[in-house]
Length: 152
Image: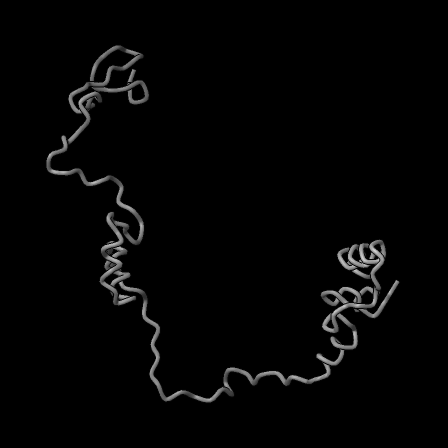
C-alpha cells in the first residue's frame, strides 16, 4: 500500500503508511475524491531531495574562533523580594503598568506569614495560645514533661 507519500519519515523507515495517512486516504476514497492529490511536501521525492545536501559537522570547541570580549560567569546575587510592578516598570519603561496593578505581586519565594497591618491584632482571639500551658505526663501524671521524656 505504498503510494510514495511520507508523513514524518514513517513510510521511508518502515515502508508502511502511518495510521493518520491511511485514515485520510480512506476518507477521500469514501467521499469520491481522487487519492493522489497530496501536497508535494509529503512526497518521498521531496524528502529525498531535501536530504541530498550534505551538512559538514562543526569543528570542536578548541577550533572555534576566540572572542575578544571578556566573559566571566558569576553566580547570581542574592536579593530580597521585589515588587513585580516595579520590575515591569524597569523592563518596559512604562509608568502606566504601575497604575494597572492595584495589588502587590512579589517575585521569588513568598514569606512564611502575611505581614499584619497596624490596626490588626497580633493573634486571633478565638485561638488559644500554648504559651502558658504546662504539659502533663500521661504515665506518671506529673506536670512539666511528656510521656516520651518520662524517666519512670
